[in-house]
Image (tube, rainbow, N blue to C red; front, side, top):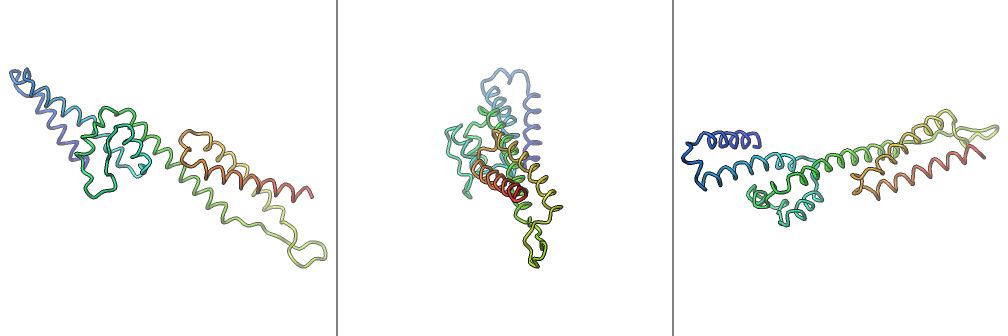
Length: 192
């Protein structure tokens, strides 16, 4: 739909520019030209706001900024509500929100990927001396795990330092704490 609207608005803009000079002096022409230009500015914002990375928290930021209530979850949500919110007056801020949403989606995906990676990891135990039951960690696997743990901790700390990680601070902190405790525990096992 956006592509069709873009073609239509570009066509309107072209036709507006080709109007006779006598009409260009009228207030109605200036009003029409401004409406077209405003819509040309809003259309890319609508495309940005339609991306999968835009979550309810981002819509809330837009509503707080514009001072307009946007019924985004309603079946009655229409394009006119976005136009009436004067998004064109907040183009830079909305672009920042959308850019931040994209970065947050990357962070969220990476957190899920890391969580899944570590949830499925197990240590191998083997027998020791005359004991026939598994009671000692198998060393080779532990070395690999410690390397992976260090790399993951670096990734998590980097994400945690980014301003776009704010919605995930609690989850990040919990994951960092858990993996840090795991690393400490592995080190204690090998020191004793």
